[in-house]
Amino acid sequence: MVNLESFKVIIAGGGIAGLTLANALEKAGVDFLLLEKREIAPQTGASIIIQCHTARVLEQLGIWNEIWAATFSLTGRLHFDERGILFDSSSIFKQVEEATGRSIVLIERRSCLNTLYNGLKDKSRILVNIGVASFWEDERGITVITDRGDSIRGSILVAADGVHSTIRDLLAGAVSRTDPERSQYLTKGFTSSYRAVFGTSANGPRDGLTRPLLPEGIVHHVYYRNISGITAAGAKGLIFWFLFIKEEKPSTTPDCPQYAETDTRATIEKYGNLFACSGYTFSDLWEARSHAGMVSMEEGVVQGPWNNGGRVVLVGDSICKTTINSGFGGNLAIEGVCNLVNGLVSLLRRNQAPTTQDIVATFNRYEQVQRPRADISVKISHSTTRYESMDSLWLRFLRWLSPWIPLSYQVKSFLSYMNPAPILEFLSDSGSIRP
Ligand SMILES: Cc1cc2nc3c(=O)[nH]c(=O)nc-3n(C[C@H](O)[C@H](O)[C@H](O)COP(=O)(O)OP(=O)(O)OC[C@H]3O[C@@H](n4cnc5c(N)ncnc54)[C@H](O)[C@@H]3O)c2cc1C
Image 1: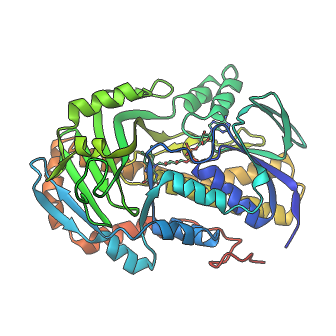
Image 2 (image 1 turned 135 degrees about the vertical axis):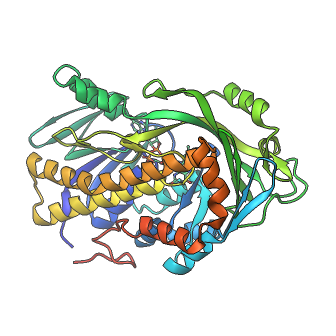
Image 3 (image 1 turned 90 degrees about the vertical axis):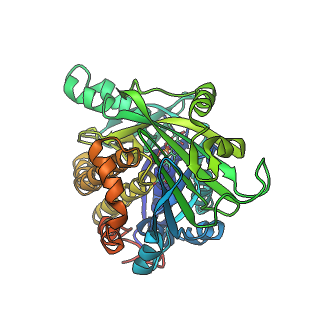
């Protein structure tokens, strides 16, 4: 293996993108240091679907088995109308599993993050409760200043710091006078028209429940006008649930609402009486919760370039945000990491001391391949959110039509989305380094 240790990647953020990047760099033998502003894997009540193409990348990284041990395959989707009547039932997950040979699973986000963290051999490269506050760069590298005032020297800085990215804000600030238009793209890149209440609850006789609400592997969807819901029995003994509500008016970052617990409670008081499926309401799920929260569902792809023409590049939610309904956001973040690392490893194998120009060219190529994936993912998620909440007359008609759309067509569409997703090119499927 080529020694790539002279090049050092500083990663801002230990979420899905940052920890996946850390694992990929460790496997590739590239030095890195990850700074996470908070703790790793906080409990928020959020969950994450892992699609088949992402499972393949996690297999390459050697961490799929731990995820699989905590979950089981999603199998069926049942769709209910606003009267609680089942109008469609589909085995799409099962069919996709048969076609790809890989499962679709749903796991607590914190379990996914813990697994990514546990997958790292050298944990001394992860610094927690330390954020990136600013940076400066020169022709030979970049210096990151932490929120404790320390300086850390590296070769590049990867912003994996989420939708409220500090680094994206720093990039916007840096060009606010010279290029106000780009500054606006960076600050106002996302809009939000929906909010999501989400939670994790017991799926069994405890915490107020006398029986499991739904069988393992089953996902329930409920459709109201401007409101929709998803409940899924994904991980052992747990239900993950979502209540999506259209906002009275859309907002744009950085002014999208950030909700406190009192807002979540008020929303449940207002909408909790709605059935999540015949037999139980969102209030039942809320009462049986271990954790829950409410977020604004920002969406959009920030206009390029996704780098600063220097040694800073953005990945994950910092640059592309999908609504939650399709379960694409975290999977897309992992795709972005694959495309970025593939480019970096290829560059470093050719040249272990690349110039800033070489690095920018690699960042631009990453964006070139990732942007179409980001665009399509945001578009599908946007449509799914509106479809599920029957946002227009046409979508109400489409929902009525949906049971007649052949399953084979739905499976084909799903596969055509998954198939072009990247993997880590420098690793074989078993995780060994390719020459
Ligand atoms: C309720 C809910 C359900 C979801 N369900 C799914 C799903 O089923 N499937 C799916 O694919 N996606 C899902 N998503 C989306 C998915 O969680 C995100 O797309 C994904 O977490 C993005 O990962 P990220 O690493 O880019 O950002 P984040 O996960 O937001 O991580 C960013 C990290 O950076 C840290 N940070 C911030 N600023 C700094 C700084 N200055 N310095 C250092 N660290 C910093 C933060 O503390 C955080 O840990 C869901 C999201 C929500 C809210």
